[in-house]
Each structure stands twice: as C-alpha cells, then as structure tokens.
Length: 308
Length: 308
Image 1 (cartoon, rainbow over the protein chains, first blue to last red):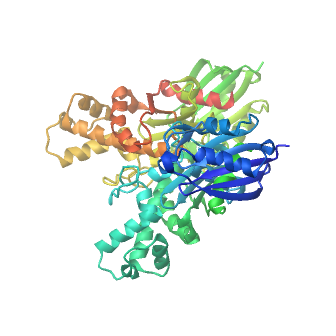
Image 2 (image 1 turned 135 degrees about the vertical axis):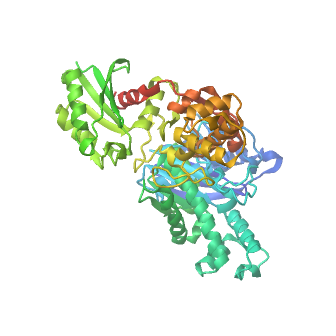
Image 3 (image 1 turned 90 degrees about the horizontal axis):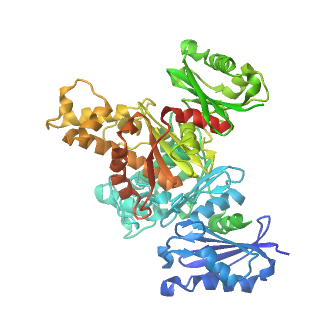
C-alpha cells in the first residue's frame, strides 16, 4: 500500500519535490515557490499541502526534507535564507500531515545531496563519501558507511567555513574571514579575480567587463588568459587545502564536486589534483575525484535515501 | 572457555601487552622490548611467543594489535619506526598463533587510543570522539558511532599532518612543511620557543638553558614569562585551527587531548578554547574538551575494544 517516498528540497527560491518508489526510482517531480514572508512561517504548511495534493497520504511511506541550515536529530537550528530560527521540522510537518505511519525526517541540504550522490549518483558503491557543492556559497556533505554525518551541533560537513585563506581575508556571510566559501565559491572566484585584476597590470579579457561570472573566469582560464588562470589556480589550491584537511580527518573513498561551478568539468578536477597530492604526500598517492552526476536532483534523492 | 582478550600496543621502544576479560577489565599487563633489528622482522614472532607464554591459547577470544603507522583492513601500509613496509598483520600473527578461533585484528595506535578512551576512559558515553595525542609527534584518532575511522588509505585521523603553519615552515618527519606536528607536538613547541627566543630580545628564563623541554615552556608560561606564554599561545592556536577543521568535517561530541604534552592539564584546554571558539563561531558555542584519562594504557584498551 505505502509504496511512495517523497523527497523535499527546500531552497531560498523554490521548493523541489520528488515522488520516488521504495527502490529510489524518481517517478515524478514538481516544485513550488518558497514563500519567505513572515520569516517563512507558511513554508511547512505549503509543503504539507503540496504533498497531499500530489499523492494520497495512505500511499506514502516517508517524507524526507532537506533545508539550507544545520540540522541535528530532525531539528533545524537556523536557516538564515528562509528566515527560520530553531524548528522541529519532524514534529511540525508530522502534525500537519497527521498520519502517524508516515516517517518524517529532516537533514541539511548539502549533506543530503551527498547521500543522493551515494545512493543513485556518481558515488554509488562508495562507503565513505565527501561532497563539496560549489555554488553561490559552498556547502558540504559527508556520508560515513551509510551514515549521514550530522554532527552534534549540525555542523558536520560545513566545509565552506573552514578557514583556508590568510591573505585576502574576504568577509564571509558567516561573519568570519578567509572561509573556503570566500575564495572558491562562484562568488569567491569572482572576488579573487577582481583582486588579481587590481593587483596586476597584465592584459586580460576580463577587464572588458564591469561584472563577470565565475564561469567567465573558467572559460578564459581554459583559453590561457594569465589572470584567469592564476585566479583558478589559487581558488583550486584553497579547495585542495580544505580537501586535504578532510582527508587527514576521515580519508574518504571519493570526493565529489557539485554545484554550478562544477560545470567546469574535469578541468576543475585536474586543477585540484595538482595541489591536493602535494598536500597529502607521502601518505596518499591516489584519491577518487568525481563531478556530481545528479545535478540539482541530488537533494531529493538524498531525502528519499534518508527515509527509505 | 575463551574468556580473555589480549591487547598489544607496539611502540618503537617497547611492546605493551594487556590481558582483559570480555567486559574490558584489565587483569594483567606486561611489556617486552621492541626488537627493531633486520627491519623489525622478529617483532611479530616475539608478540606471538609472549602471548603464548602468558595465556593458554584456548582461553583467548581475540588479539588486537596497534601499530604506529597507517592501517587499513588489518594491513599495515608502513611503519617507519619499526622498519616495516606493507604487512598483513592479521595473517602473519594468525599463522603464528595457529588457532583459528582466535580473532586477530590490527589498527593504528593513536586511533586505537581514541577507541580506548571511548571504551573505558574519559570519552565513555560519547558517540563521536576525536583524540589528539601530543607527544614527540602528533597522532590522532577518530571514532564515529562506535566505528573506528581508518580511512581508505589508513590515513583517517592522521591529524598531525594537517598543514596549519604558513609562517615558520619547519620541516616535518613526513617531508612536508608546516604540519601540526611541527608546531604543537613537544618537539614543535620547542621549535616555536627557540624561534621566538631568536626573534625577540625579551628576557626569559628559557635563555638559561641550551636545550629545554616543552614542559619547561608550559611551566614558565604558567608563571607568566612573555616568550613562553607567546609560544604556548601560538602552539595552541595552531592546535585549535586543526580542531576547527575537524569540527567543520565531523563536528565531534568530544575532543580529547592525550600524550605527554597533555600533562599540562586544564591549562592546555583553556588556551585552546580561547582560539577555537573564534574559529567555529557562529556555528558552535560549546564543544566538550577533555584530557585523556587512560595514559599510555589507552592503546591496549582500544585493542581490546576492537576484538571484544
């Protein structure tokens, strides 16, 4: 009877839903707009309503939700993007769904994306998986032997906030300086490029633009532009440094790179490897690196994994 | 019948043995000298002989061995201290013991010390435990929900080789520069103190000695000496940085500090906390820190845990 699992990935702009069977096959997906009014007080209700409209409750086995903030034991500690403070998601959504047979669980979105990649994506078959999602910010997720690493304060896999830069000291959204996010996210790469353009007199096609994207920096780096190459080299060295720190901690079987920046493809892996192996020698001569394969569906797959 | 477990902690100078009952109570301990001649080829035989002399084999349920090198799936990858290259410890020792009912397992010594502290020491009752052992070098160990974190290359918990120092660039035994071990081990603290004495003209009782120990630096720091205080502050900031990196990775429930340097007691925790909370804000306002409680018996307790 209860043959479906629902994955819900809550973002600052939209909420993505996936309807899965119990083997983790994605049968249907849809999304709604995120209503952030009044500190996002309608979001959970909107989720419950949307699920009820799409699937008869007595056919649902479980609902997994991913949110952009630290989560521990199904309690969200805060989600700045959604306007939320502390929130017991399991309890609130369970009450609205009002069917005690439906298992409800919550987790951090990037951590669940890591679970998704392990469950049905590029990291399938690996036991210890680390994901870096390089987007506007940097998220991270860690799976250790099938267990989602939440951390006692929900900070497990918050890889974007490791300090890696002691030179530029760009300010991070978290208030600190030098976080990985400030130098290796899409925003960070642009920060670095602008700083390099200012400090150098070298010609660069990047000077033609008042504003530009990280993609542009990658494109010109691939074409051989000095400033763009130097920028990508620096950004990937910072990223490699964070990856080396993670390696000396849990020595994962595979490191997966996701998020918009990962569209740069294998080029990004080559740039990381150049620095990474210098940092982990003589202990490690090979680590598996891969570009994420589920795109922005990784989160809903991970939600499905969590409650399957 | 099989009521005993044997823990064996192999060090560069001596091999410690512990005879435990199956509840993990230490009933007897002894040690033998480590014979490092001919690349340590006699060590495993010496271990087997010593066990056979001490306990009738048919009363032994399991033997756990800890060694100072990376271990994965009971295979030691190398132990520079013992002269060993790759070695299947489980196989070699099992053959010498020649009793198929005895479970033999091997692990990294610092990782097993972490397991020991979780099993019977200060970290009892905690699920996710990180240990830093500050001795001549720095070892580390991580337990995640009762699982010993070995890592795919045996590098899990090799916390002494995270790069934390970009200023002094002291060379590490591993060949790299700036590893945590070069600035926060007993040797590292002396390195830093000497560098500070050279760079400053400040008076310091440390100038009276041609050579001195990390303990002396701690003692004078507690007494208020400027150079000693500055040195300990720097060393503990480097240590806090490595701990913050680990926190952003697995966010442990407790961080335990062991090894000779931990004899400085709560003073060391106070010095770490001062820097650590700056590094993990605004995500974390409290982490449990503790000084290890099993001293150099932690290793054999961890060996017992591994095969109990």
